[in-house]
Length: 193
Image (cartoon, rainbow, N blue to C red; front, top):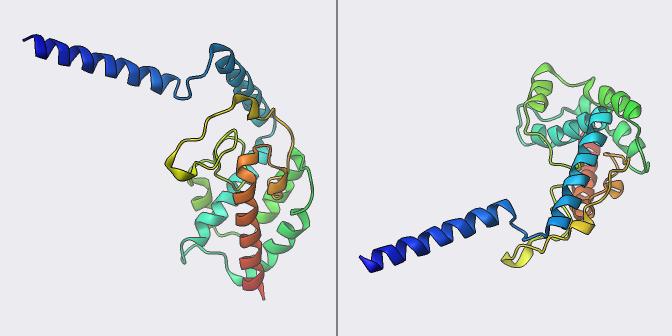
């Protein structure tokens, strides 16, 4: 009986530790947690004020989904219309919310209803936007270990250009986003010929 009680106590202790870890997986101090919460709220406010930038980011992520299915992949004619827009904006440092609305309309004008529906129903992008997929605060997670999260590396909200991943506020997303964007432009340019 004593063994059972001891085993149950150990199990309860482990469950409590797991719950605490799940609530604070990086073992952040209360000050660090408050810092992150403040930055999250600032990003939520930024996204609320820049809905068209977020929509454009969703369209870019949607292009990758379209390309993954031969039935929805962009046609030669669509690529001819889209590539010049992508190239025009690829090196610009900032895109305003109003510019993002205009660019998004230009990029989606040639799409079919099926393609538009596919983009609209695609999973939403992560926080920070862009064609990335990195971890907040940097780190690549290689080597089987979770990188230590540094709240000080979570950037403050700032304007950026979703078509120029070099401007993404989240540094950890830039390298992969640059590769994806440049590959998409290269592939669509080849298709447009």
